[in-house]
Length: 138
Image 1 (cartoon, rainbow, N blue to C red):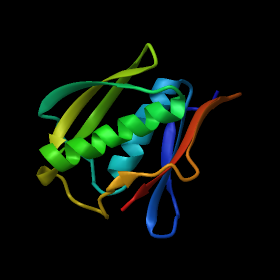
Image 2 (cartoon, rainbow, N blue to C red):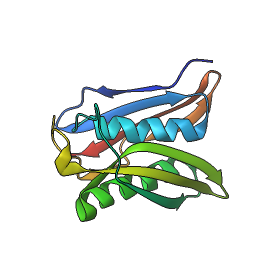
Image 3 (cartoon, one colour):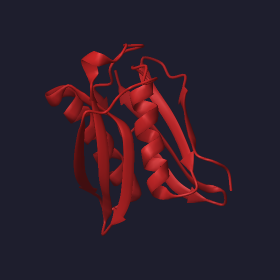
């Protein structure tokens, strides 16, 4: 089984990220990291508060979208971003521990995502673990 990771993928006028991991939960965490690292330098980031959220969905794709929407909501309303993400499976979703940093303490490296799209959304298990791909409006 391959290790966990993520990357940005070139996409016209939007942000597209891919993530992979041995488990569904780690793949979700990698997707969150990919989105956050797309517009912030998280090197040396220090979390200052702990949050916990539960996101649910009928399908794994719905859980992915709900989690990323929660991250964007907290960014927009609280000015905070997760520097550590620890999802745990629950019925129809995940409970996610988020160790948050204040966004104004981190160097900006790109455009801030505004919304998660459903265009070419993918999240599934495979022979080497879980993979996902998601596009966000910037």
